[in-house]
Length: 462
Image (cartoon, rainbow, N blue to C red; front, side):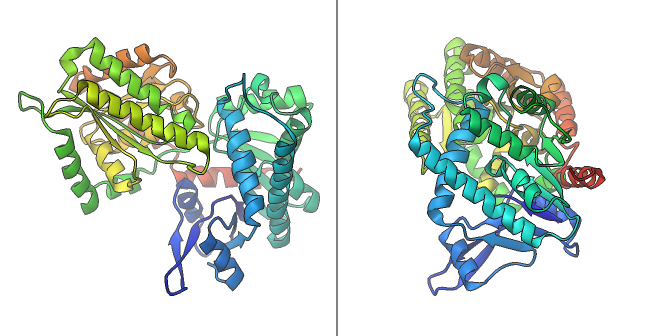
């Protein structure tokens, strides 16, 4: 069995003495792969991302079960930032400001050639490493061409692909140049089986194929809604470093003028454009305008961890998040109350501490493949929490019945939802939180991965 993804289960750094130090990769995929056991005959093919990774490849240093590809840094940058994150991500999340973008010019074509080379490097490595009839599970929008390329090289393989993002509806997907759109779809349809996080995204892909590729052919479609790892989260959230962060956060939050604990609205996100952090802050500001009685009685704990800061549009967005948070604090704050507690330095222990303290979780993306934060907070929250959830998050398909649903573009509507969440009675909040946690953990990472693998092994190779 082989897994292919841009980011692998290990990364390397070069210490001052020139030695290489390996660190374990994170994320649900790493947890999922661990389910097959260390004695299984498996290989993970990934890209060297850092100078340390590339140095490890050059020195022949590696971990058992991992093959890291030393794709030239300029080719990787064009493929990863120039195409995957600046084009395919924007299309699937419907993020373009269409009066000005996208512009598919000669520079785009140059970068697309790098994306083709990047995908071909993965396909060739997988073809070289795979045993007869092996199962290959390819991950995400970075590698949409791999299934088709690999099918040509190794028709004996069982090939799967899983999309961790939304899939654009046909009317938006057709924004891509016709030949590029066709190439993406044909690449995906090289797989025996394609996996998506929700039925909505699977249906959107199917609709694109029917309009632009003549249908699915023999490719099968499956839906696997990645869930939270409850055992890990509950254990990790009670370790000493999390307890320390909780103490520090309580000091930052403070108490209301009558001495009672302040209520907390918690969000934890990367400063990814689709996460909609700015409108969330504006909704909180609207709440303070509409309901002055909440002033000094509530704090918005907002963790906005920088993402893709090598792209100017992401740097600008991160700066806007900070500006709006500062504006709210300056406008409403008092000597004893900071309305927004904003942190931008990534700290997983502090995120878990915030989860535990949350009275309300705010998850309002404009579009999201799943959003694990919406699933993790109810699992970890000490007293149970209300969930304000965008209808455009993939998680809404599973959690919507027990969440307060919002239109992510409607700031006043989101402010009303925050007020409703804050005024929810403790018994109702606890009951909703229990049901949210049960739904959120229905398909934990290990089961999520094995379900896909079982389905792929049961499929006939195309």
